[in-house]
Amino acid sequence: MNTLEVRQAVPAPVPAPVDAPVDGRSARWEAHREERRRALIKAARRAIHRLGFDASMEDIATRAGTSKSVFYRYFGDKAGLRQAVGKVVIGQMQDTIVAAGRTARTPREGLVNMVAAYLQMAETSPNVYTFVTSPFDAGPLPEGDLTGFFDAVTAMISEPLRDLLGDPDSPLLGYWPTAAIGLVRTAGELWLKTPASAAKPDHAAMAEQIAAWLFDGVAQQVSPAPRSIVHPLQAEGTP
Image 1 (cartoon, rainbow, N blue to C red):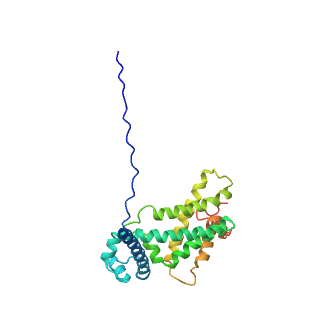
Image 2: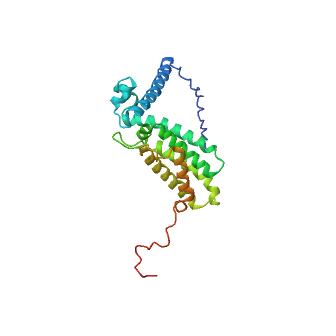
Image 3: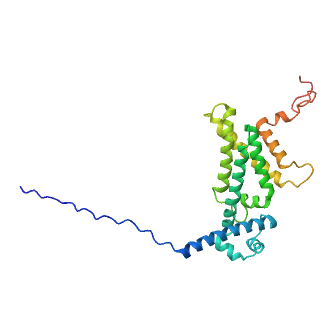
């Protein structure tokens, strides 16, 4: 019986890929385009700060000293501009809040510092803050930017809370920080919309008040009702 010897072909070595030569003109154009985009975002922020969160693309472009078509070319539409501005603004807010939290010596002080930083930055330009956080005719901010911002703040609050609960594995750990962020954002945005007056607290006092609500609760800040007051559901003569 003849044995057939099967010889496997040895594949020829594949030459290493050669990097395509870099097109200097293309690289320079991309760098110019990115620089121009950053300048337009900065100009848009200034325009929105002056004109209001509901300013039109045409008004924003005019204030920025360019045409509406330029903004459409770089951002697509108003929702695209909003996403681009939001990414920059929210990134700066998050960096500031993280830095503020690191200066604290206690969990409560950390919360006060973070809330104060958040309120102060939002107060610096409420029109820009509203532009990047509230839905309007351009549609809601794409998922991820604002959600990621508040998720990061929630995570920062969770860390010191582990020490307060005494149980890092407690199922309650996730509830309080999430609820706290809801209170911070809701109270903070209501505070932003409140007209300036002698009765309106500044951002530092408001941060202290929000921290008191979260750490101490409302009961400790409310005087107990006098014993002589009869409950409205209690019948007369009933002990």
